[in-house]
Image: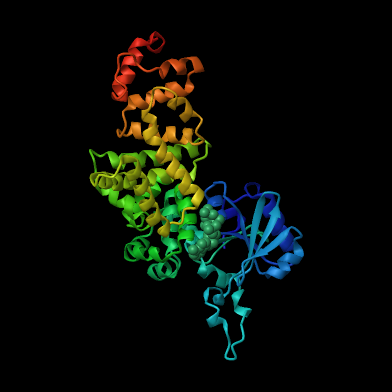
Length: 430
Ligand code: ATP
Ligand code: MG
């Protein structure tokens, strides 16, 4: 036990609503602790994403205490206490039976034994994943309770699994993704035993339901450390389980370009998050899948399929395989297709097409995607610059920019076409 004088968690860092819940439980005679990621983050002086509370009150007792409370979950019930938009999750300590299947929960007569679903803090601690995630902040005396050496690991910046690493990863392979996510987010190192176990069990990730992997994937790549996370996932052979086609496409380097594109997209995402901007899932996922789609389309073009059909078919094939592993919702894949579909349209710079493109609901995403391609050499930067000027220009200028060049054959390349237009337009060269 670390008394208040031996740690740096102060109540001013804790959300008022979480404090209300803790104090209320205490007043009713129950034990109440903060646990998990919030304690870990508070010890680092970081603002936690959310606050999780554990108590010895059972869910029915919790419900009686809080009016603004909803119980969720079937076998293991949790309480959500609502304060406007903030939700404080309140869980009862888990007992040894909490992880077992319902079958194991039956007695000789086949009756359901519910008693050992809920337990004590000493039982609750062992089901948690990492030692630094198993620290309890006690509202009674503001101490931190540590059964597993989590404080020492926290100070040393080590992610160590509680118990035998391989067994814990086999129990729940998603813990491997959590290991990488926390390492990247906190700047911690994986304990050598944990690293070894990941190499041994990485392939087990493919047994995880695709919907759960989608949720985890969002946490991995939209937390502001996506580039480092990506590199670690690749290092441990986890990325290839999540995005096999992307991993394969990264092995094929065209003057180093394919690799740069995704890296740039991830860097951009991290920068945006650092600036407090949002990153849309479909944009980054479109970047993930761009190379595999391109490669598939190239194969189809070799088989004499028309270009437009080849890209659509490539997108269909790539997405239908990918969603079996990571279940991307339909609205996401639709938007990804739109971003891809806009790319060839940016080549048209004369006539009414450019102004129509501006009104496309995905213009901004498509344009950002074009910029990324230009930055990494897969598109002429001059084309991206043209669109930058064009979408910022007033209507008059826009009209001038899209005027067909005189003396130019209609079928001539857009680039040549554009250069002549630019030379002839005095406004352009100013
Ligand atoms: P975050 O900052 O992402 O919220 P977190 O550690 O709080 O990180 P949660 O998913 O909110 O992660 O889980 C809260 C706590 O529940 C964890 O700290 C850990 O103790 C426990 N936990 C969550 N998922 C698992 C798991 N798959 N296996 C074991 N313990 C888990
Ligand atoms: Mg949490």
